[in-house]
View (cartoon, rainbow, N blue to C red):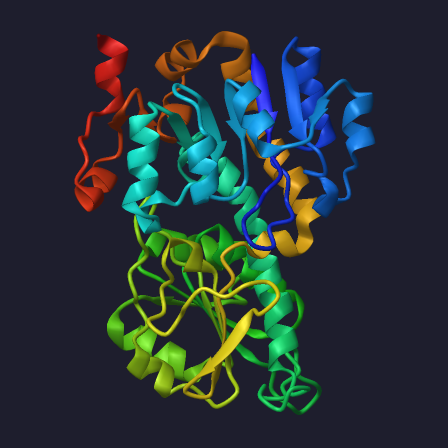
Length: 373
């Protein structure tokens, strides 16, 4: 199979979809891999490193898109990338179509692209590719919180996250007990913070209690407890995920108004719309803004801060899925791998996700229809 890896053009996206190890695995399996020149530069992978293992370096995105049967990306497609797609190509990428434009899904449908959203691929009931990025985002959320709690800019509360003898540590309130929430809780606890996790799933909260030996306070989510937790927080981390859907605003602007001056919000859910009403997308070079005296950090591609680690993690989580399709053919794998099939958003000109069909008013067909025809 002909596989292409373009250079990411989304703003300040430094990750690459596959590391040299993943490219090597594809080439050893007999496939041809085209990589756009300098695609790995942001993660410190050189063209020479890829060439040594047999990849073919090309010098324009048009050439990568034009030569490839299967495209492997990181960030959601931008308009100029949509235009370069060829009919019937296979695409692996984070898509986040629920918060995208209608034009994006229409273009995927018109060109009959088989589009896999990394954030939707399942394995053993989990989301393995998203999991790898969520682990990074959870750790980074505490690292960033430490930075913005400082008052070097005159805006942060001036709090040491772990406190000192006789001085209380920071209160870290985490909304969501999934992978981001657990990883953030572990990182915050390791730094000596007071950690509170709020979720509406009692089993997840039980897991948190067992995992951290009751050192983390768990709270069942409802408007009353969320409001109290937000008001108490020195740092509020939004880690809410509804698979394949836009994240609802569970923290209202009124709640934010009642937060402590100089407190910090890290809305990790921003790539799916954000779970905090006052959030808006920011960038790595201009990551924060202040609203109601509260510092907001709302960067949708947080893992790009540690692009090399993130690229390795993305490669490790995705390469077996890509190899399966390259080795055995798209339809054969979709018939036999239901977890991978759940990642498909568009297929042969139809939308295979009902929520997207309802949102954008496009024709919906469940993927199983195709497998039984």
